[in-house]
Image (cartoon, rainbow, N blue to C red; front, side):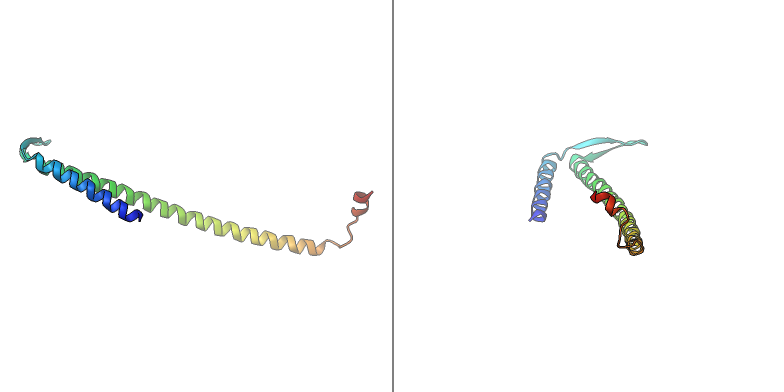
Length: 111
């Protein structure tokens, strides 16, 4: 359902850009660092929208890759800590086996 709403909003946004672009077909000067040229405003609007979408997509992919990398690091760290905990629990059990069942301090606690 979430995908459908996202797709619907994207389609609505594309329709709004298309209508806005069709209403603005006049040629406008575009200044470059090395010169100027005349372009239809519709092309400038569409190119700007596509460039914005591409930049947003690239940033989203970059953040996704960083998040996946961080998740892998955290999983490795978690596994290492789980192994450490398991080893320490084994040590505790071995030490408890060495402690005699009769606790010499038990009499002092009860008094």
